[in-house]
Image 1: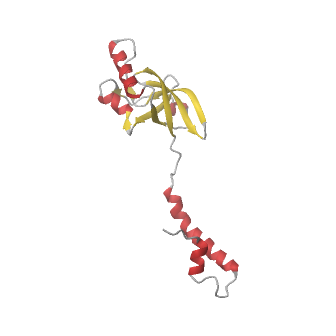
Image 2: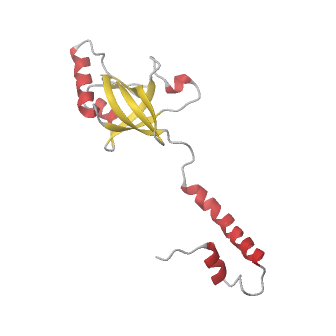
Length: 160
């Protein structure tokens, strides 16, 4: 398909060459761009997604991981602790806690995941009870938070 420019459109419409000054053609082009601007603005996101690529470097327990966050443009945050939002797994002092940790390790240990951090103005909106950042984690399009609950290794919770 042939790429067309605004100038091509203006010339084909006959706005240039009929004795109109060049500024009239530029004015027409500006008007076309102004009309197209609202449509272009609606195509993009309305807020920052706060979604990152992250390398899982350590599984702390069944609901907490350490990651290297890729912020883009070759900027990284190393060893950031993330609590999987909305779930609670047993602590690794008993058999259930060890099983939860092993299951989470088998799912994402050493892998690259997609992490969406929760955003908020106040730390309680984005940090858990141990000041860990809260996040939703996906691997290959599957929610790891949900997978931990479905496997029986974690329970849903409303509190971070």
